[in-house]
Image 1 (cartoon, rainbow, N blue to C red):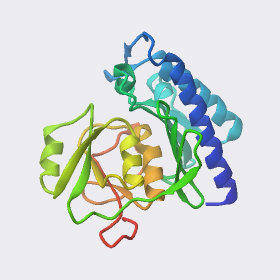
Image 2 (cartoon, rainbow, N blue to C red):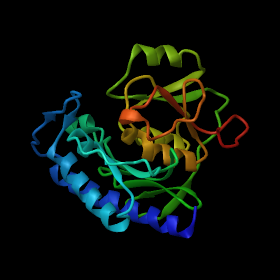
Image 3 (tube, rainbow, N blue to C red):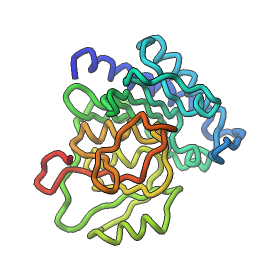
Image 4 (cartoon, rainbow, N blue to C red):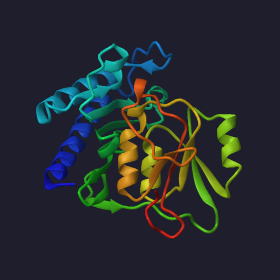
Length: 262
């Protein structure tokens, strides 16, 4: 990653924070919840945050197309045949936003040749940012300093597994039964990827429907921290797929010898 990319990483981190602050204007108030065609919820907070992100990306990188969740839902899908594009989920975890449990995030990722090469995840309620830069993955909490983060190898006492708070399934339970799991943690949104990236959990299997914008930023952060995201058969998870829908996948920390996962 070049120094230009490092500057861009900081810019998209700040843009995610701006979108998160806009979301917080709606948080705690009575928001109107609508249902999209896929039965997922959407609110004015989703749309307001996306407007901020689209405007910001248009100024800083006008030559890179943006695939954004609410724009796609409205039928606005850009040409990504050039291989480089943004993936944006302005409010990942809308159900968590509606239930006011705080576990929702703002996600912005840059995809190049099918890989997430830059990413930022912002947790508005805790004012917590996770992002990639030229020298790895980083975390910032409130007004505190920037801290490098790294995924951990599997602990000998058993794995800490993350499961989706809103989308748990019997298939996921069956998958987890194949491993030595010491603890299960429920979490919402792309925060699960960040918890693995900062070394407090070990893996997150998702055996259910997700879209590329749901996970790209978290994937970027986890990869920069030494972890990986693969399909169930071990192939690297790629982006720019027809319809932007993901197969089932597993997000992991480092391999047992401490080296970055494949």
